[in-house]
Length: 326
Image 1 (cartoon, rainbow, N blue to C red):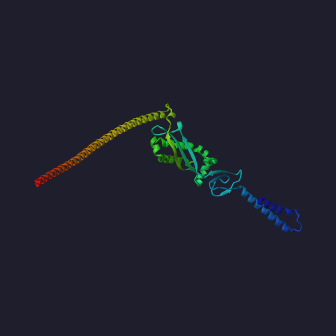
Image 2 (image 1 turned 90 degrees about the horizontal axis):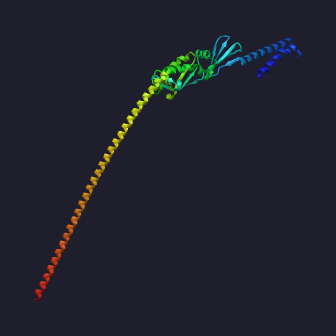
Image 3 (image 1 turned 45 degrees about the vertical axis):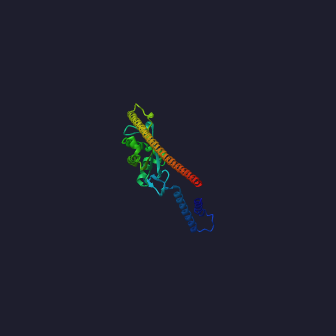
């Protein structure tokens, strides 16, 4: 709005003095007003051009201007972009996550000819330097700001790297050493993505498991070998499990027998101890009864002796009385 007002003022100053509608103006004053109007129109035109044609890059988005003057990378700044003469290719500087899923018949084949279902996430971005931004613009075009489009373009490179590394490791090794698997894939993919101006930040293996045998095809050479391997491992595992179960059963029975023997020994010891205690109690009781009987016998004998002595004394007294009487 301000630019439009300045444009009207400039046009008025440039035209009105020439129409002689303002009386009393000297020729010098007229030309001065015309000059001011023209200068103001030029300034307004330049401001309009800059406002309409000047394009700035944002913190997370650079762009490449092609056309007249050659390719120019713009980041953290801006430049003039003239329609028809120039073309702008945006380049995203944000980290993009590309998902790779390989399952079923498309699962990866391992070193031991087994198939493995896998889910991986690749985190990639365009580095903030002129070479990578320009290369990304050339190889990806405007698709580099759309993760789905980028994923579609580099998908085969990512899958190829996963396949290459998977064939060098057994299934169990892949599962137990996921970090090594991801590092090996990252080394391969880093080189392949460089041609697209992309940098691989990290690789994450989020899911990894053996493919369901029902999805394997017996007519496929790799699947046939994999099925045989699965059968061998499964049978061996069953035999080992049965042996472990039998061994465990034997150990349980042996432990039960040992426990029963210990219980019987303890019961026998307890019975012997109780019998010994009963015998001791009986002996003590008999001894006590014998002592009581002996004491009673002694008491009875003492009483009898006193009775005899008393009788003798009575008889003696009676005899003495009779003798005294006589």
